[in-house]
Image 1 (cartoon, rainbow, N blue to C red):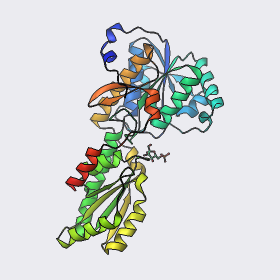
Image 2: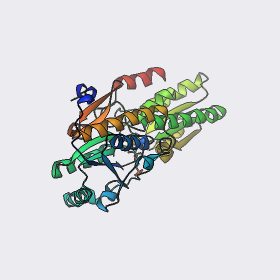
Image 3: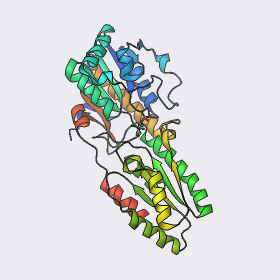
Image 4: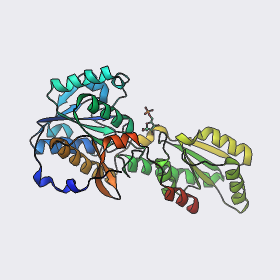
Length: 336
Ligand code: F6P
């Protein structure tokens, strides 16, 4: 893992090498993306560097949906979820020809560096663009999934985890009233990080994640045992990558004979006003990204490691898969 914290504290020697940069958001939106983009824009302008917004992610880069921004462009957005720049997935950008076409649009505006706020897929697109064109790229991990290698944190995961916990708290009331088993499906793409964070914080009895094999028959036996000792309800969080909560809920009800209901939280997890944690961390990462790209850094992603901001090699971040912390897996079991 290549972390370089030393240079983060040497800004007094900051040398401006870029005159114009751009920022875009890509992939699934996440609460806090606006805070990050706002920090990029205001930091660049503070340092006397022009900054452009690329609207609707790589699709906008291909369509030349690129507009110079001012400090006022990012007023009144820090409290809003989503992304004022918009985001979109683009098949054309997946092709080398598409990336060359997009790069030509950047050149048209004199853009010399690009801050990409997105998940691992978006950062992977940026890494390809950098390799093929040489443009400076700095990435910020913007996704609720918390599944970007090299960082403990991604922008939006705290707000999403809080949204899930709020839903779990509400589901507890009705589960207890009816002595039901509640199965809750949460997002996370192929990662169990978000499910694990919310499952532990929400006090779930079980957290089913793609990274850890689970035995439904044993789970049913344990629940039946608990109910026979008077337990009123059971709450199971299922990461979407671990399976379908609807199928799992149906199986559990048939196996145990206990009334079971399923809630698939879906895209409500992506919205909402970002928490202080997401606003603060996104703002700090946005400033770091802007200063880095302005001073000539490239092919780095900024994230957090043990609570401190770090820079990660972009290619390492996209070429590696973030594993689930086994300590959390154990904790979820112990606390159930
Ligand atoms: O990557 C973020 C994410 O919310 C995943 O957790 C989820 O699987 C995916 O995006 C959903 O994608 P879409 O919004 O395109 O349906």
